[in-house]
Length: 260
Figure (spheres, rainbow, N blue to C red):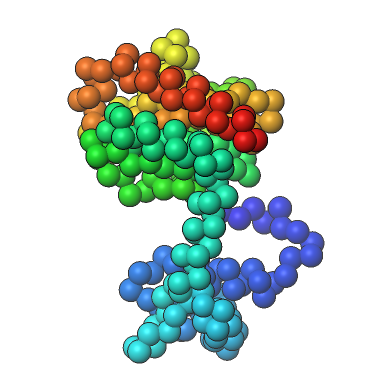
């Protein structure tokens, strides 16, 4: 959500409108007509037509035979560039893939990006339930994932409160923590455990564990490691999961430092 108070004085309106058009088209997998885009973006049809034509020329939207527009292939190119930039040194990704192969569980790296908790790398494991939302760039649900908890635990209580107020505590499942008091108690338990944990808070039947990889005074340089697994596996193997996560975290920290 954009903060009107943070709007720059030199905002280029045409660029802002074009991005709103792109976002609207991206949220409609079945496509939108120019009139539908104009209505959703609160723009005139004439302005929308010019914006859509420009975006189509650049490859960011595609016009179909029925006159509707969908996102273009240039979006995929930008996403690949995002993933590459996030992933960091090759050795970091290799450690992540090795962990997923050895354990069978999907592993994730996360850090603060622009002040938000975000996933920066993923290695899928065959024993983990597929979580289509958890891809590089995902920046929602920090309160409901162990990755998010591990990062938020590095903040002060005041910083965490501001974060949770700004981004909310959406209930992903009936088990999702939606009060700051419960969340603080949960983080404290994770600190005592030496591993942040969630059981069915993001997705029913799925558990996630997270540990800190690199502490740093600069919050944007802090990194965490997490893995997802069936909730039943977590209930019987939490200590093993913690030990393996800490081993991988040390290897990732060394890899990141050696090529940083």
